[in-house]
Image 1 (spheres, rainbow, N blue to C red):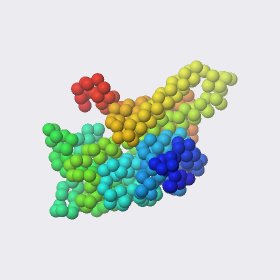
Image 2 (cartoon, rainbow, N blue to C red):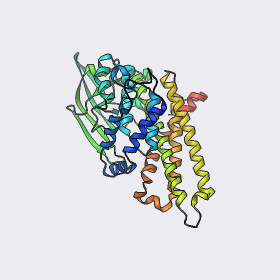
Image 3 (cartoon, one colour):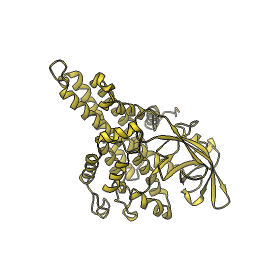
Image 4 (cartoon, helix red, strand yellow):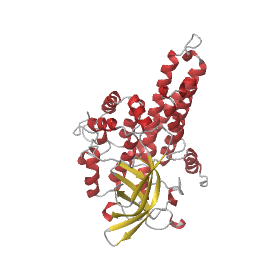
Length: 391
């Protein structure tokens, strides 16, 4: 277990410490258990219990708030390592996104109220930004928070694809507090901490065929009253706080993607070493060796880029382009590995007991969400080559 008194900021927790803890998690929580939870659409409660007991929820939280210290790089490493064990701790990602925003933009009271229990794994967060009519264009969201006197805001609107909100203790909710103005498009965003059990909040499940234990929901907000003290940062100036959610989202997703890609490659290699329908194992065929080697090279390239981007973010250096690149390349590498796994397993891949299809479906999903691959590439081209914005 990681010791809260032994942190990156003071004595220097090493990557080997984090690897040891994650190895303990993946030893206690099997891929078979996660697959069962996914098929039943049940929360992997044992995973959360073990993560709490090993201290992983303390990663990324300053020691002054009961955490282990560390930054985005260390959290991405933990996700990478858990992914290599076939685990998919999605709510850990949304909780880390929320905590990053609270670290950078929350006031002292908010940090004390939320970071301390979050470091102990006592509370988790959902992240509520996406809307049906806005999609990737977050500037077009319509959920609106209106000030009522000096103490409260009243919020109305609908959010979609909100993962794990039904069991989260809080959600980071992105709203508008002024109407969209093309002349000052970056203004008017405000970010709130909202209890999903508040009066006026209702949830509707989305039937997603991805074999994921964590479910996604439509969140309806009907005159939801939220105390003004729950706003993160200043009214109308929440865009920076929003980006401090979105960049970690991309990089933590990248960390998990390369971990899962590695898991899929190892799983497929094991199959190819024993499958011998014509006398020789299929791992002896160039038609298996070459695509697997290509997938490995892409995965390791994506892994290196993801950690490079994390290091820039941790150093408060603009990491927008690198995060887009890492997000894109990690999703491409994972999808290529999952597709190769399907082809190598052949008809056996369709047997759910082989546990291949869930990885393929999630890999395909990663090419379109939480941000579309083409939007990533267009943003990269715009920034690097000075092209006009195309979306």
